[in-house]
Length: 274
Image 1 (cartoon, rainbow, N blue to C red):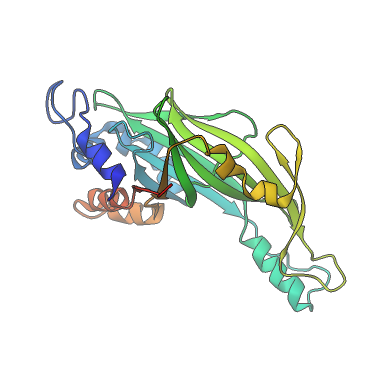
Image 2: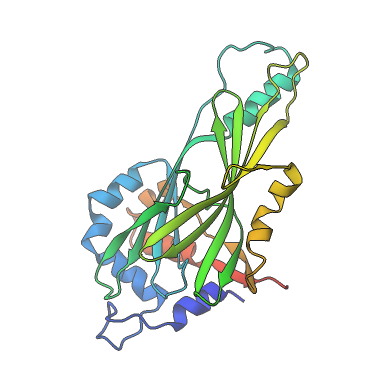
C-alpha cells in the first residue's frame, strides 16, 4: 500500500487550483496547477533545470501539498598521475573515490496553502551544513505525538583527496523548513598511500552529534536507536528523475506533466513491521 499516495490524495487542500476553499486538490490537479504557475517557467526553476541534477515530486510531511525537490551533486575525477598507478588495488580505490560526491546541494519547493504559488522551502541545518542524500533514504519514522515524519539518510561525501565522511542524518519538513540534523558521522579514507594499497574504505573514527567518540558498531545503530521511541516506521521510495529528462520533456506536449506524475508515482511510504 502506498501510504504516501493515500495520504496526499485524501487530505483536502484549502483554496485548490480548480475551485474554492472547499475544493480538494488531488496530486494530479496540483501538478497541473504547478505547471501553470509563472514560477514553474521562471528564472528560478530554469536555473535548477540547467544544472546537472535530479528532481522528485514528494509529500514528505503528508500534509497533502506536493513538494518539488532538486538534488545537485558534483564529483571529481581520478587524478591523471598518482603514486602506485600500476597497483590494481590503488587503481580500484581511485575509482571508488571518484564516484563519491565532493559537493551536494538540495533545493525544495512546496505548493502553497491556497494552491496559487510554488514557494521555496528553507533548508535549515541544526548543526553541520551537509546537504542530505535524499536519493537513497534508509527508512522513515513518525513521531505521532508531534505528527512529524523523519527520514533517515546516510550521506556519503568525499573529504580531501582520498578521505570520506558518512553522515547519519534525520530530515523532516516542519515549520516551513526542511530541517536537517546530523546524528553521527564516520570518517575514513582509502588506502591508496599504503604500500600494497586497498580498494576498500579504511575506517578511522566516528563521533556522535556532540563529538563523543563512537565505535563502528555503535555508529551503525545510531539511526535505529534514535527512532526507537517512534511507533511507526516506513520503507521509503522517492521517484528521482534526471533534470535532463525534464528539460527534454518540456519540449513535448504534456511532457513535463507526464514526467512529474511518473516521479510522484515513485514516492511511497510502506509500513514496516515492528
